[in-house]
Image (cartoon, rainbow, N blue to C red; front, side):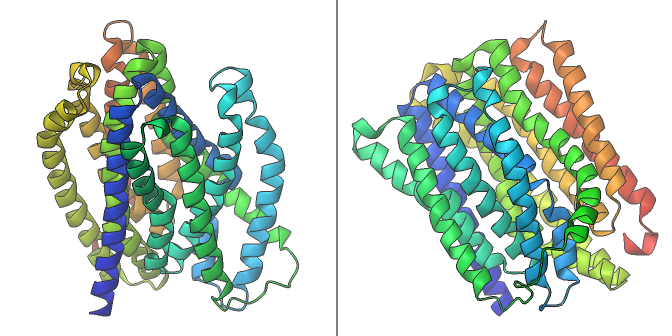
Length: 413
């Protein structure tokens, strides 16, 4: 019963976060010019992509190490990870200036960008650590303040006070929410009882982790590159105004992955890792079966609901541009469904320690995306990027499923 209540609360927090993000994106679509919404989309995906360079995807290594380490040495491992971050910050934060030098982003957003980048990275890493420690409920509270509570505040402010209907209001709210999330996360870790904080940084452990994490980082950069380059490419093909419609639609679609993280993945994937570590084929098979069934049902239900509500929502926005490009939504919904389904064999392979197929699928999927998008761009510029996403994510789903079937013994799958 306690586990059920924790999971219900976790889903409730994640669901509330999703609702707030929905409200925010629709209110921005209503009160901001499409070009401003497009600029907000570029800023958010650029921050999301830059996070990988600040963290180096080192959590892929740390999560597995934390789960199999004693409580009295976990502090030293985390301290070593923080030491790595300090090096990465000194290298990559100055390099982000190139985004503004090349005029990919306007200079007036530079202070906002740097502040949000650091806060988001720290909050994200705390969230991942707490999930690995099976503190999903606390992780959901962090996510709520980081991506949900401030959205409600901004929605109310922009709806009632017209002078606050500017992009800077959203960015200020985002910063405040991230700061609250950090306070909660740091306080929980400080009281966790981990030992080893006073020990020296284990640079040998860090180097070993880098060797393991770097190939996965390359794969992740390729995968997330699809959801970053797509905005810039779409803007180049059809302009910043139409990008606003694209950002609105893709924001709706991405809510599915957030919900899956809340209700399915964060609860089941630690169990997959533990079952593999304990050589328990039965437990692994049951967890994987649960993940597949729950993901399939939720993808279908979400897609059907989104398909039927999109038209009245767009009419409520009262902006003809969004209705004109409504046909993009169905293609983006299909691409996102393929991506979410690919996470099922992804977690299966990851838990079993088969990282190479994941790397190959992401790199090849990115290449497929580029080829297909470039092929369609001269003929149908509005649909070139959605078609590229469908092709890229479709290949990734096929390859991960095939490799999971090939590499997993029958009694494990």
